[in-house]
Image (cartoon, rainbow, N blue to C red; front, side):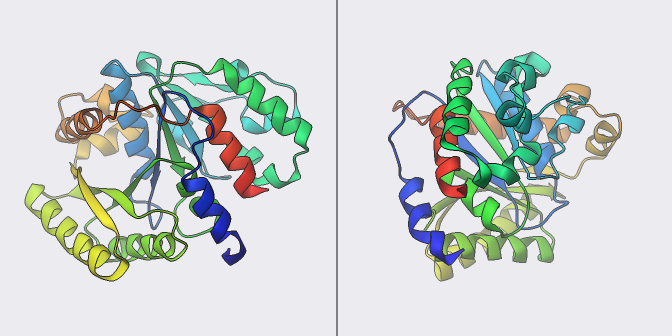
Length: 284
């Protein structure tokens, strides 16, 4: 991991390829905090608000965004790279037109790719045009792949819950990110909060630790309430923003989506082809 620190720093600020998509990595310090559910519902809400969104399930081997959306995909990135499939064969179109690109086992074999395979894959990605947002859903914890995907994005969202173990693990992840100088800023979402007061207090403690000990700049993006409707939606394999649009959790996601859109910058961002060029550079 240490021998990649310099490369991660360089690629985190690499602006060689420009497009209009805003690339956001969503991660967490531990599993089971609701990260993938948040990504899927945020993506659908942004799409519902008129944005063109691609969700990239970058959880190597354990991705489940497709299940949360009620799909069972036949193919993933592996099939595009190794089995001659086109991007259109792999990308799933979900509610309101939101797109999902399953990463699958292909992400674990990036270091095995030839230059020709990489160039061919980048070329195929050219069909994904006109995107406003690319949301990358990483695995949980601290490992090479998670840090690599954090380095690839322009914005980082860390999801945590008020539980002490979740906060400790999220802080440890930020500590690794700060240590390798990959990012100096992060947005924070507090999931499963009893109420807004608990969420704000939780963020305050987390922010103080990050600022004082890691010298990282935090931004409170919002909270998502502990909501039984959310559990019911997951069991029925429906995004809660679709199944229960008026529930408390759905309204919280609406607020977060509006806040993200409100902070959009006019300058162009790295597109999907530039994103994968960074991914190939980091993981090879």
